[in-house]
Length: 359
Image (tube, rainbow, N blue to C red):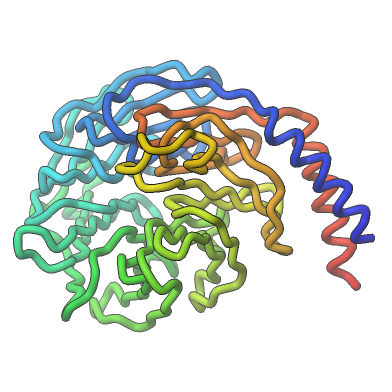
């Protein structure tokens, strides 16, 4: 039976490596985040060039840009109806945009660079995490976007609540809503993941996920699992959302900046590469700038997709699981549509894995 799984895995490795990409050139500086909307027909990207961009997810055509920030955009999120786009930047602002027209609707000012934004379930609340620059304390701000119960966007300028990361703790790299907006999960540069009670703003749980720098957290489609990317430990880990228990580990030979969970297969995609400052000293092959595919349950490497020539900073998978997008330090976004051979072999391999799991 394991021989059958190895055979299926071998077929998939070849298929993944032959995948063709659409190169989307619309940014002049490193990509910081890429993200599909809920329907999967649009892709949004942010960059250190101070612009966010909207793309068609089938052809990779650029639809428009969101222009207004005065510094690098570090993070973005799109609401579930694709009505509003939120961006956070090093200019110490969070901005809300009309996703269709590109019009800036509102902006919140923070005391430091914003590293993460995330719409709550229902899209009426927004969290924004700032770092410790300019003598500020790492803080999660919770904003009410529809104040006074109105149905149109009418944010309060001041945060509804603030969660302070007290003491000598590292910056927040990602913030996510969880438990039906009752809690917030934050990932920190010191390798710790923390869970906070929204009502009391108190820490209720923490787990040391890795020994050094965490780079990113990303939910599975049903939000029961979290993929954690560790730049310092050269690995990605799969966490249980409820308990924050480490379920699986995917070890690499390079810093990992991004990890994403397939919505249809037992697979995890991870990407990264050597530090950007060292890119000029090595070839693309030696820099390990591929996007790697791992079998989620058995923690086995399956294959990789090459193409980027600098560290991969962000990965997202289409909601239907049949394509993925990656953004890298060189400023390119790459869109990959996975072919039928790959999809068929992945389905076959998952069927063999489920059969083996019954033993």
